[in-house]
Amino acid sequence: MSLLARRRPGAEVDLAAVRRAAGSVLDPELHLTLEDAGMLGEVSVDRSGVADVTVRLTTPTCPMRERLVADVGAAVGTVPGVTGASVTFGAMSEQERIGLATRLRGGREVGHQFGPDSRTQVYAVASGKGGVGKSTVTANLAVALAQEGKRVGVLDADVWGYSVPQLFGVREHPVALKGLMLPIQAHGVSLMSVGFLVGEGEPVVWRGPMLHKAIEQFLGDVYWGDLDVLLIDLPPGTGDVTLTLLELLPDAQLLAVTTPQLAAQSVAARVGRMARDARMPVAGVVENMSSLVCSACASQTAIFGEGGGARLAETIGTTLLGQVPLDVELRTAGDRGEPAMVGAPAAASVMELRRIATHLPVVRRGLVGRSLPLTVV
Image (cartoon, rainbow, N blue to C red; front, side, top):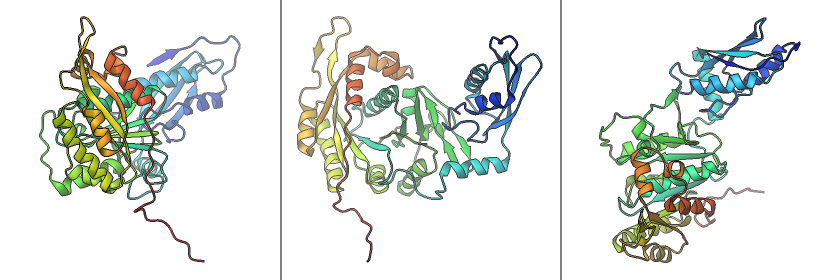
């Protein structure tokens, strides 16, 4: 595989410059340079100016090969005298994989990276009942934030009803690196879901202890990297997974999703009250399916009633962040496995979701109930 570049007449190729250029390429999964990740192998240049670069992969089945070929070729093509690039792939040794996993963990053997000192804003997206479009809201907010230039992750904690693989159009197994999983990349977002670990259509019948362990591993045994935002798609209600998240991530912020219906608003209020009782910060409420947008005339009809989002926000003492209309583009995008933020950027629902993402608040947990370090003098 090669990528050609115009040779500058009379220029001599600086092999060290070629290596620096190749080593500066970011691995799309690790978000580290090839040099820092220890993935850069032999580099040479033949008499005709073609650079031969070896990239040592974390796994032979790496799904990002074509991306690496293009990026490495483009990088070395900027070095004077290089006429083209040939990128070949090798595999890391067992010792190199162990060393990389250790570096990625940053010396952390247990636990997760999203503690009180983390710079990552964590939003737990919740609803009282299913069918309100919580996962669709999560997916599109994530893509909108990524389009703003933020580094974003989505953890699909809806173990029984996972839908992130469908909404993002990906069905890959994550790469495992010595007890550390690499999240799947799609539309600029890092993803992890139980749906990547089980077969298509296979039911998940885990109970309490297994659910707790799975959520612990999704947080601590996944290389999330230096995220700006992590969105966690919770299952509906106040069950085991939600309780586990409250325990493991006390600094997460609740983002409640409801529809205008009284039934949806009243059960969502229970989630909000549970968060308040646990002193979990509440970022706000998103009212989804606020009205049906006619695809022919663009008129809007409040088929699910009105005011549910505002009532929920008032009940749990927070802000109504926005009202997302229901339109055909939002539904068809999800069906074809593409976030509407990508596939239908001009849709009314997408514009409102983008506005919500832009104004997503940051709410800090108070000191009440928090363990504070004491120094004896």
